[in-house]
Image (cartoon, rainbow, N blue to C red; front, side, top):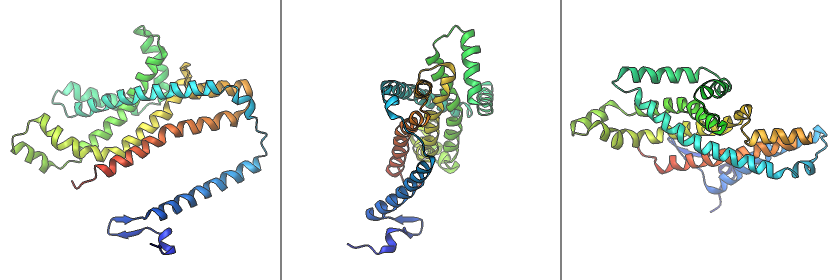
Length: 266
């Protein structure tokens, strides 16, 4: 079936629903990719930079080790931050007031201070006071606490998006509080929180680069060290950007796939 030329560049819309055939998707992506490629090709051509990939290539194993360490740190922090965020989101609904206000204090303190300062305080002050010297453990916990405050608010907003009438109906048929959250609230809140959660997870992966300030041997620190050895700045930081993109892009794609899979009327 041959598509009109305009359908390759303009999405057909019926109400709120868009219909974009596969050929139109491919054309749209190729045009956007070509535009970005031309812009950067022109910029690098005018830079007149003398590339030195040979010196950087000798340290390829250092890049690989740093990237794998970033993967491990990010994976641990993602899981722990999700648990922390879920706990404090539910704690804000708690009838035990000290727990409720502790959660509010935690959220406002974490969101109101820079991550860089938090890393320094947790490592050189809090961890030292409790005799914790493993900088990797401190780094994961600090990242988790930081991201957990934002995830907490994302989950709380998703929970509160469920209509009160549905909660009243669930209580009317005899569901317990736990059953209401399991069968009514969480299934509907799940899709609502997917896009902001994906953005927060991607930010967490990139924020792990700040752990280089406490000498955690992750991707960014290793790239900085190679730059110090070779004086090849662009050759070190361009692979750094690609490496982070390889970690964040799958999260975005997975989030969109889950959105489509769990799309239903609420």
